[in-house]
Length: 306
Image 1: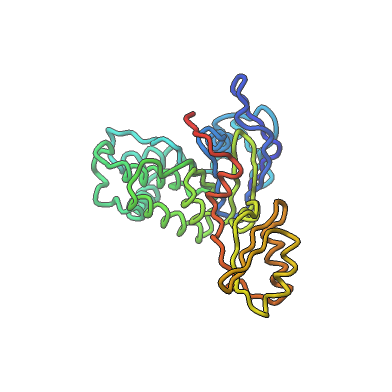
Image 2: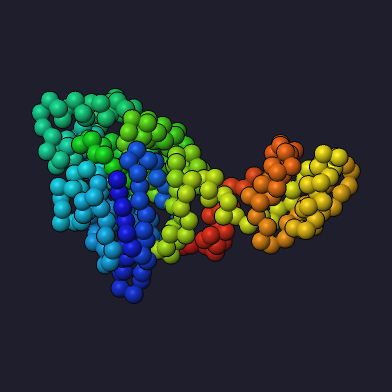
């Protein structure tokens, strides 16, 4: 549905995006995960047509996606990182403005506004000025404003920053429901738990480069296998343990083997070898790798204040 090919964006001497290529399938819930200043918002702004790339191409359903092609951009909805609402206007007035900008009028617009407010539990506050809303309420209103025209691709740029857990969960549930109904979503975040819960596929971006791309299970294979694994010392595991001796340090005590691999021996190879000996995965005790561990492995542990 969406394709970015060798996309580069510079701001003076800063390379915000450095030759990024990726594709998003129709109906996918795609996550763009990265630390502050990684290039997530720049990617979103280029897809939305708010900025133009210095090199590379973006296409939506095979058609060029540029700032000049306003008709193509009607297929997009954007939930920006910062609240984009008129604080002195009511929720209904805000939604009416956004709906009319997309050409909606009359009974159709009124019906969509009522549906949107009910969906995010704001119908009882519809006539109140937005400046009286909590941060979570404003975030929920900001979200449905981007969906009034029923786009086929929704861009969510860190849409839960600074809100309470209840509002965050309400946004998650709403987005999950819309995705099940067929809406394609690109979701940028630096929260591991958000990407883990929501996204069917994740791209990890840092310093303007895409460092990894895949499902959660595929990304977990990027971790180096350097943790100790324990399994029972029984006649059934003896042959397997003997083969492991060539791939790391094997110690036996208290009826259990403890194995720590040498650099280069992958976790996938360990379990493939176990499977060849018909050993079930539940025999092995190891701390399950996490998306956070992959993220820190690929992007480093230094603090990001930019």
